[in-house]
Length: 408
Image 1: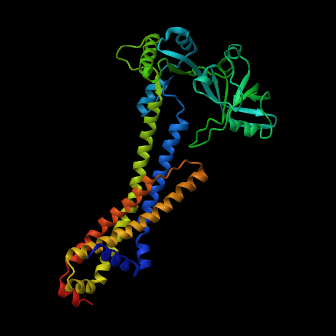
Image 2: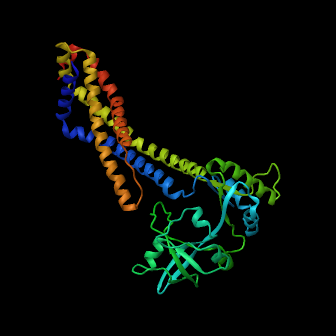
Image 3: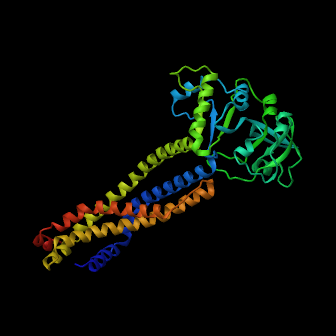
């Protein structure tokens, strides 16, 4: 049989039992749909995290008490570290660092804020030095970030996020108005544009105030500062700047030669690597769950094809008596299984894509369905079909001609 005749015969056999063929595909459809939806959401999250959540520039790194925690042991070790203090920041920012062009400090905590009769109970309020805005390239929708002189004078001014503006000032221009942070009045001098919200993290709900005001009014005992340092020579000078800061901190804290660093370092690359580790683990777990459905779908296809061999035994015998070769019979059953499964793959891709975009619309999760994801889903389904059709094709091609013709 030539390929055209083979395809025509396979399609005719599938159309002869349309309902059974569709029911056969349910496992494949569910498996492929789950895989496409999961991969689409995780792919979208990876892009979103890279572009929106990890806001560190490639040439900026963070010094903090904890750093990246990967295990309970690391957490127990990190919690014993002393907090980063104001005096340590002053020493580092006094000109000791030759490989850094900028250094800023920040601390934050969750506080209630009020404006008139409106109250937001859990807003993240961060105290920062004046160069924090330029170091992180914070764009403002209106107004400005506070200056170094305002920070030094401990002026009660604030820069608010878009969510805070929408909640407290839905129809008003917030610039110049006074809001209360834990009962203390602050004049709003800047508003940040909306940056989006996802996976529980949002810059839009934050408020920034001068660090000196934060230290005097809100900083609790043993609260650690977070230092943000920009390498003088850009990305090429990042390692040298980190080594310099590491040496300075270890010297200031009298850390032994063989002792681990008494602080944590964060870079854009380390944060992205951490996210890749987390997302890869989640991806593998979800793929394992999805593959169970896909495997069940393959078993169903194999069983239905075995039933089809029994039903069509006489037809197979007649065809072989008329000159059909074993490989023709084998190819037809393999093609039928592959076509069935590929059709299930197409339907699964459609259902999975729709599911991913529904998740994005309802839960505000980023989703990204690419041509590669679509092709992978269809190819995976086709391979499952070929594997499932192997045993039925083998049995059909090895029937004894005379026994097959006599079958009823």
